Length: 397
Ligand SMILES: Cc1cc2nc3c(=O)[nH]c(=O)nc-3n(C[C@H](O)[C@H](O)[C@H](O)COP(=O)(O)OP(=O)(O)OC[C@H]3O[C@@H](n4cnc5c(N)ncnc54)[C@H](O)[C@@H]3O)c2cc1C
Image (cartoon, rainbow, N blue to C red; front, side, top):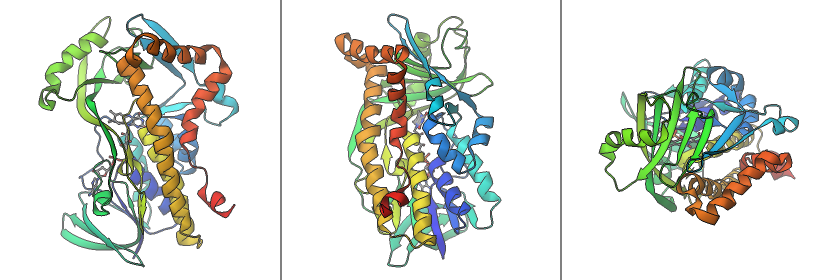
């Protein structure tokens, strides 16, 4: 019998499997698709997750494949005001006072390669979970793969299978919350945003043409994410793209589109993150709109809390109550921290906070960040507050 079956080969699943395998546990990761999904999604990892990536031994490689960055800018489109700040104030508080820019598929692939070199880990692509049941000793998962259906036994199962999670559905869990009326269109594009005066990471604040524009590799590829009414047909997103770019690109408007992907946006959290021997993590557990880059950040903090807790239960005889603590704490952090702040960010960037005095209040907070280092530190610490520090220590306290 496996120790842990991880369902879902996104970054949450791959890094959780890596943490468990590094502890010596027998792990299998199963992914429905033939390879790692490389659609344009997470590209910024906040400084606060770097300790966790370091503990897994992948931070250096992630920095080498992507790049590190310290400076950020909010641009008020209507007035041209630029509110810029850097992360240098963090230097006294962390060994890694920078963010990493890197496509999430590449982060997952670092873990995939590490797992491929380990005898106690297996990765099965093209193999989809289609059902599960559990008893006192373990979980039985029904997997559909290239050789047909197989029943796999594991002592524990981690559902890291994304927003439409089959694991969550098989557990009969509700996924309450809201779906926004707007659709985000994430595009990867070659265009010289820097020459056009954009910072390497810019939040364009505007009620009509709000956008998040971020350099995502050292070869000149940028992510430009904008928003449109979700009532417009999804099939004609590309027809409307030139008009959206017309409003966002300045100077030489030449561009070459690498890819574009439309996304529905939600704020939702599963009613429970643990049912017996099954645990949820990442987007399977909670989804947020991506303004501010808190979605995978929260998923990575799930991973950093979950793999040591499961390891302690499996190898050190720790009480399973540790896993209840995982479930309640990660849910609380999403509902109390991640989701409200991501929603506030979306309102500011894409709805200009409703305009007028509301916008001014939001901008005043950002301006204060630039002139008051203590306040900047306080605001930058937000992403640290999404972490659940060592559950084992808390359970034994
Ligand atoms: C435009 C955009 C930009 C974003 N930018 C950021 C950012 O900068 N920073 C940030 O922190 N977050 C960001 N996010 C959020 C981030 O992309 C998600 O939080 C992240 O993908 C979650 O990773 P995951 O591994 O939990 O799930 P996923 O990446 O969705 O992976 C789940 C995997 O499970 C597989 N799967 C599904 N069902 C089954 C099954 N039955 N059996 C087996 N496998 C299955 C899927 O094929 C998939 O590969 C962004 C999102 C969007 C849409």
